Length: 153
Image (cartoon, rainbow, N blue to C red; front, side, top):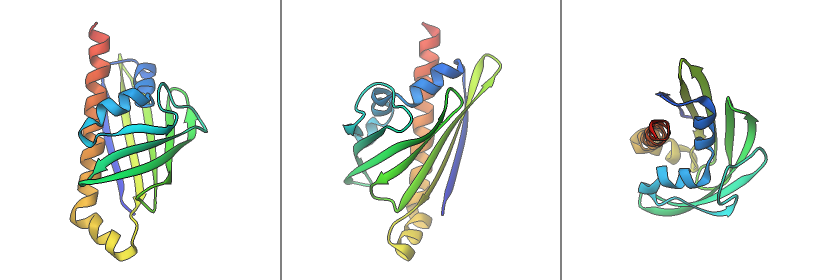
C-alpha cells in the first residue's frame, strides 16, 4: 500500500489554509488540469464532518467518478477524507495544518490501495504512485498560491 507524504509552508493563517483545503470551488480550481468537478453530495462551499462529495474528473486519460466522505475533522488542525466509491480499492487522505510563526505548515498523507491486486501493484510501481504524488504536490502549490494572494490583498 503506497503512502504518499507532502509538506509545504504557506504564508497564511491556519484557518485560511484549513478552509481553502475543504472548499469545493477551490478544489475544482486547484485540480483544473484533471477537469475535476463536484457532481453529487456537497457541490459548493465548505465540506464538513460526515458529508460526502462525488467528483468527476479525467485521470490518466480516463473519465472517472469518485465519492469521498469526511470521516474525521478537528478544526482547524486536521481533516480526513476517505473514498466511499471509485477507481481505487480504497484511499485515506489526511490533511494536517500546523501553525508556524505567521503562517501554516500544511501536511498531506495519502494512503491508497490500487484495484486489481498484482496488476494494481505493478501500476503503482510503473506510474500511479508518481502520478498521485505529483497530483498532491500540484494541488498544495495551487492552494499556497491562492492563500498567499489572499493575504497580500
